[in-house]
Image 1 (cartoon, rainbow, N blue to C red):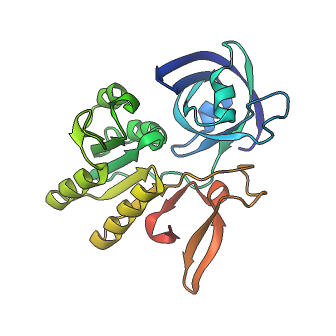
Image 2: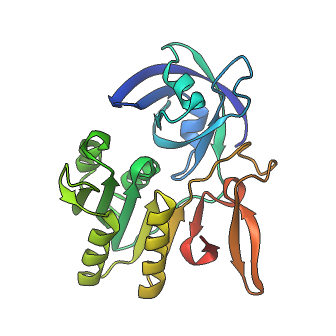
Length: 259
């Protein structure tokens, strides 16, 4: 963990406008990585931009690790232009707080936007251990990704929502999650996505006394707790303290953080 590795880019695919899936040869990472962990990726050999980009692991099988990015700024734009065969400078896997997997009977997995990607490996590892109800929310039809991949896992239920109703169900993914949980007992909720979504999931889980694990999306400068840029309020017996998403997370028990 935390080792700099040179990983060959084997495949790059644009899965929808501005969203790319990368496959890299990284046997050490594939062997070590746990659901919820991330990579710190150097995006340029010139030192500009200086900071690495934190990217969640989407999938790991045998010697291959996959991650998905959405082009949002200079760093991710540079990543999207990397050529096949290039060696990528990567630190990882990182993150001490990972999704904790047990034999839960009924699980709700809730993702929003690019927050769905770290949930794929988790869902695969839960297959056969739990009844899996997966809820994936997107802004619109153009941004819907990985629907087929989740379907192929073999789920009890898959709900796809779009904010504008341009594909499948219209509305917020959390509304459909709430409705189903009200009607059926759920033993655990796993969630990753925008902060507003996570706040809703956390509040609902605490109200219903359902265990819940959330993966926080924060800007991380270093990924190892040195720069102190990804602070989060961690609840203690005496109030709260500031922890760091990269070092203690990115996955936390919902009741342990104040977001």
